[in-house]
Image 1 (cartoon, rainbow, N blue to C red):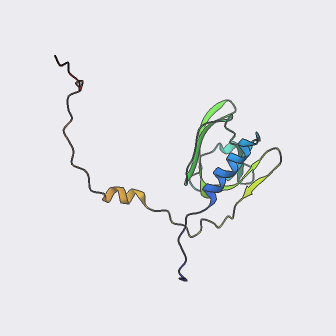
Image 2 (cartoon, rainbow, N blue to C red):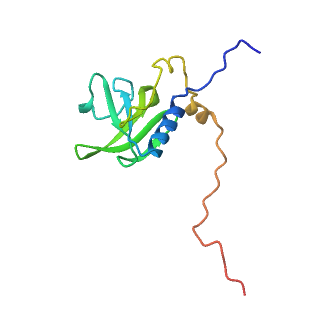
Image 3 (cartoon, rainbow, N blue to C red):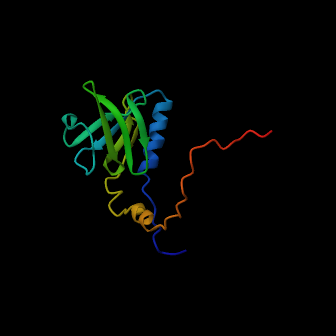
Length: 145
């Protein structure tokens, strides 16, 4: 065995998705606690208290929910106004059920030494495929007699 540490991705995005699914499967209300002071957080700032915001992320309260490894994105209504919400996973403090507070809170230092792969630079350095000329938009079938 090698003493070299293995570089792994954070577990937070996977745990958030799993706990969210468990809460929804049990007909409970998933609440997401977010560090409102973190970078790239797009939330309604009028609802922030003590640098945190708690968001109801139940499927019935959100639209177009997307939980990726880097961001949670959805639309929700605040005071009757629809808003786009973006929460980087680094800003997620915890996820729990409103009704019984069961869930998980995360180590705030989990992302300290994590450096995501630079997909943009990999795409930029990728050789471009030869472009084919566009064909006329004609049907590809013809009648044979």
